[in-house]
Image 1 (tube, helix red, strand yellow):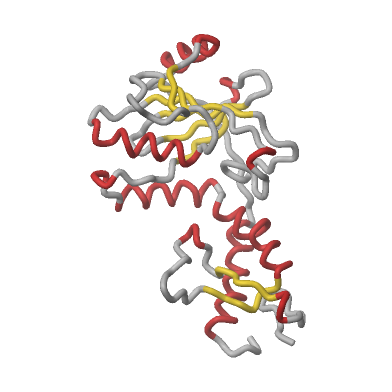
Image 2 (cartoon, helix red, strand yellow):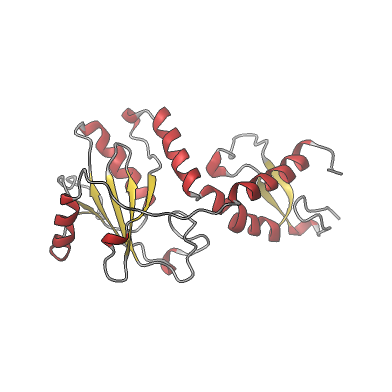
Length: 239
């Protein structure tokens, strides 16, 4: 029987699955031939790595923001790309009842405030939606967007990027008009959020106090998994 590259145990062939040693989110999905695809990882290890190794590393504060920085460096705005947002952290002063507020920075330095109810048992070292939670089990909340760019060529990328990051959440435009003929998720600020709207407008250009958490060992665990994966891909099977 084949041996799982991660746990080292013999498993039936039908328990082996395809594993991206270098995760797709970090550029590891290459076509037509993927040198980072490993087919000798059992389903249990594949699932565990996604939840406890790959996922926490990809969604760590440092990794998220490094991906956003790199994307902006090489983006061609004329193609209206979807870009990752920069994550600042949780702004406790803006919490609304049982909804917390997280501050993100858009492609042109835009202020993106995401209000939502945290998922029970949510790991606060994971940036964005909790890992392995179905859409219906997680409150998408709502977004208050303050656009910085005055050049309209940036606006499609800003809107598309925010929509991609916060799937299912209505996006309220705080300092610009809602695009005509746009998506139903794109809305003006409703009356019941007018006080919050005014607060956010007064905070433009003012330093925010935000906090974030990260795991001290998240990089070490990911490197350990890469060592096993690359060893299985490129070295002798006895590795």
